[in-house]
Length: 346
Ligand code: NAD
Ligand code: IPM
Ligand code: MN
Image 1 (cartoon, protein in one colour):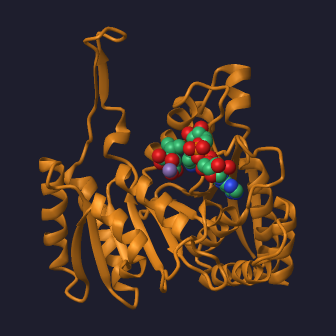
Image 2 (cartoon, protein in one colour; image 1 turned 90 degrees about the vertical axis):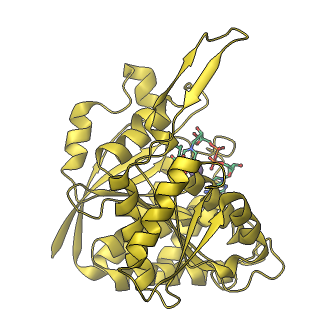
């Protein structure tokens, strides 16, 4: 039996509710795979911050680093100043563990209602850069609170950082049937960063002659995600554009409750982290209305990352079957959905 050490960070709001269902499904699959999952749960998030002022203590980070993978629910709570947990916990993990590939697939599974009348076959994956861009905290403010306040938030793009994520995106495109890669940026305005991204794609393209490439400005990309989402195969983009377009891609493929992600460190020098694309949804936390499907599909991404692609596809298949059965039915609770997916697996 293979042993997997899994760090579990349920987090805030609906995070713990959806993670419980993800683990329910993982337990079923692990039993069939003869996989022993050793879980360590970390009580990090709003409750801990209120109790101790800590977001992610160094000791917890080092412990988490010793695991094979991480499953995270969501962080952020209205009782905590915005950004404290997002930056101090979630982004700190992504940066410290060098999760430079933020993998966000969007597939319109059969039977799932899209808000688009005629979406076509949508099967795209956004490779979002995860460690740079405007997320690095490279900014500041002058004369705060005065009419002369100046706030900056500088986007950091390094040749090293851009090249490694672009190469990863090409490698993924190479393995997919359509072998197409779209760079999404805004080089008509973001002159220096746009130029670096564009030159990097052109240079790496020479190593992947079978992959065709094109380019869209991010504003136009939002048009095509709504009018013609099936045109996309692999999209590579920076941290902030990737954040925005993946919420849109989620909405188009059945909603934010279905969108999964992996924060991947392809070098495997640190554990990768799997989490729903959505947040802690304080508006529905505690009501049992959170859809755990995104968390379950994040478990599927985790299984694939751990070298179990068939088990991963089995989970996606069970989710698809559940979604088909669920179509048009009355709303179910979070745990009813998890139970139904677990049953579909059996
Ligand atoms: P959100 O994703 O939490 O919620 C947006 C809307 O989608 C809400 O109406 C919510 O009810 C709905 N929703 C989200 N997940 C759902 C699910 N599984 N089932 C059904 N409905 C769902 O985004 P927000 O409101 O912008 O942010 C809330 C908090 O979460 C903030 O503190 C934010 O910083 C944080 N956040 C965290 C993450 C993360 O941990 N990865 C991601 C996004 C936002
Ligand atoms: C996401 C979230 C995070 C991001 C926030 C909470 C830091 O929106 O995972 O999509 O912007 O990456
Ligand atoms: Mn987001």
